[in-house]
Amino acid sequence: MLEYSKTVLKKVSFDTLLFCKELKKALTTLLPEEVEELKIWIESFITDKPELQQSLIYLKA
Image (cartoon, rainbow, N blue to C red; front, top):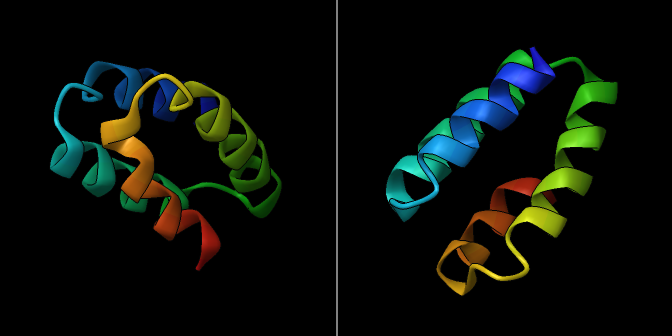
């Protein structure tokens, strides 16, 4: 499920709102250890995408 979530997030990264929606969905469906891995992945994935920085708020919750 983690790899699927990463794939979906990559594909929707062109749209900030869609990215946030899919991120919230992924955070509710993944296991706790997968959520931690996803957080690490997202932080590295959005380093060169400033428009997606607002999605970090969902990782802090």
